Length: 221
Image 1 (cartoon, helix red, strand yellow):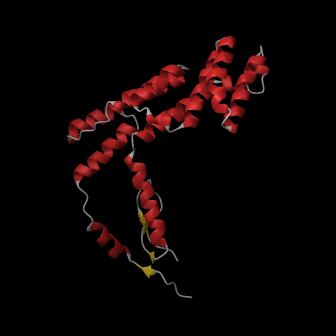
Image 2 (cartoon, rainbow, N blue to C red):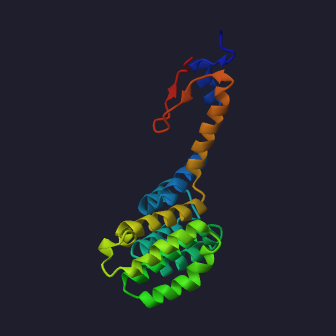
Image 3 (cartoon, rainbow, N blue to C red):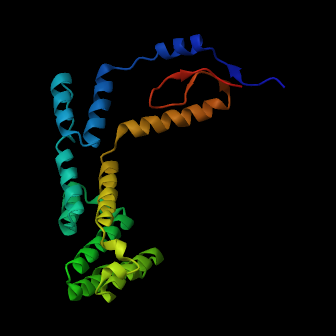
């Protein structure tokens, strides 16, 4: 049975693409946005000087890195304050992340042997949120169980005290801050994939299957 899709040759497709004009200024802004959201401070500064492209978020690179470092070092209260200084909506609109940060604060109190302070913090800050969310309650119970073990190496949830737990929290924080800074390149790539998926239903054309090289590949039937 013959395909009902329209066949578009490589020559015709490339001709169409060549008719699409993209301003260098827009390309420069896209590159700058990528460098800023990825935290490449020196590269962003150098590119700004070479291209004359300004980015109001350039200063936020060091702020975001400071938030990440604070979380990695276990200074969770400081990390929360820095996040709120950057953008209060990040935690206001992400209760999962806020609970995760508060859980990490609880872990740090337990790590430092401040059991009484940990129990008080859990009751005042985490318990009210856990009452409304089953997954929060389970995580709170797991964390509190740490205080029952003098030797946490024998604790079933001892991994909560591992540095990897801090790094996981820091990674989640960094991702949330990054998303709030509106990275443009991922959005463009998602749009490209969506558009190709739509067009696949109607035509056979040279498309990009590997985003890393952006090479056009001939259609297959």
